[in-house]
Length: 145
Image (cartoon, rainbow, N blue to C red; front, side, top):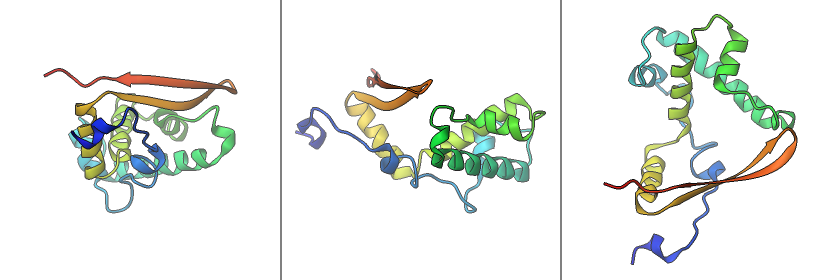
């Protein structure tokens, strides 16, 4: 019997398992490489780095501000607030870059993918809408070969 088969439910704390403080942001990261890999071509490496760093710092500040819980900005919101003329398609690529770097280091991504292929995954998150608490649950089933 596999280890995972012994449990009906496995809860992962996204704050320490695959998100916050386990991401890949910082001066050592090559955002331009990720940007090119996801299909971006128009921005220079400096523009990419400046935009990612601005978005990251703005989102981190919003995350720490409890007043933003009901109105958390998206990546595109942050970009358009800073520069309304920023091309929408490029904002989509920057969104993809941030998502890619938010996932975390390779071993964590590999582990989550391994769990995905072995079992069903339920995502449960605490959400608020208009100040009213909601609970959300979504099931992801492994793909058939």
